[in-house]
Length: 377
Image 1: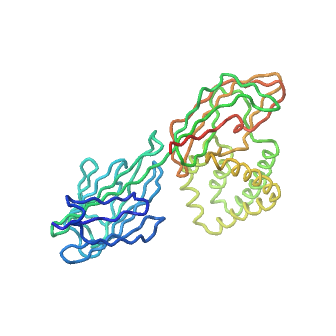
Image 2: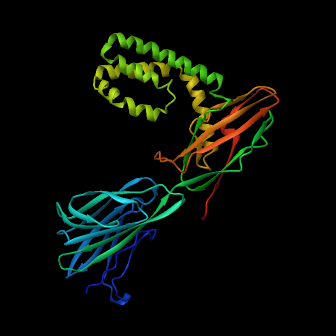
Image 3: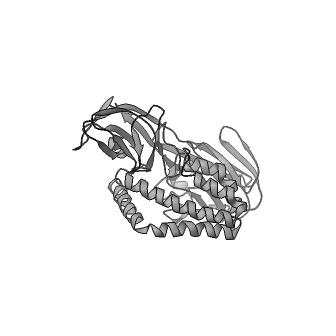
């Protein structure tokens, strides 16, 4: 039997192992790191006095819930059989260049490829409660000669768990500082974004600050006026213009609403003249309010920079909560956490408490929270 050692990548996350051979019997192996960031590397081995070179790729850092591509290239003819077995990953969602395969408990046996020298696919993952989950991909490459080449790839799959710690039943708001806050504990290393939703039964006023709300109304009025003119010029696209204006009034998230109207918008935007006129209305409106927009962007930039070490941000950090002097109100919200791929991290957190204040109180909702990230290194 020929013994083969598969090279490891620079972080030792790809590990080859020996098919029953002592180290001194290994054949001479050649390894080239083609791209250390993308983890593309070549492995060469000698079989039947012939050098065979393989190139392998699988993304290094992976978010849980993400679908990631992989590929394997080799010179020469296709093997008699290729076996891919996974654990930690959810499944191999699709194959590329595969004509025939079977799957039994995430062990994929590929017996026929369409062309020589290439195998690719898409691996799916699921979001779990574990901040770091190890995914393993084992590849068995069986040439026509029957000599088996086997190697393993290990990847860390990341997410962040979100937990609220002993939320206070009542929070007393003062003009100086907040003595009590909602403590949120994060475990994991991924960047996350918090989305705040009002729950039924919420009595506290939650809204944008007056200056931003005024800007929003001005922008909306200018866009509405421009769209009214376009309705006369393009009556066939009246429904699309009305739907676009509804984005601002709907209680649905922009993402959800966009899915409902996407087909209508795409069809209307096939009319190039109409699409150009819509963009011109928006561009003209933004330019008109450029100075106010600069002030808004600067404040947002300061916020994101100050929270960069925690890698946790509120999607709308300008959202305010209002409590009238010598009054109390029931504060009921839901918080959802999302990663950079818009995958939801953990279960939504519901908060129901009472806010009290001795003065007219106004503060960003984000300031009601103390966020702490714990990483188990």
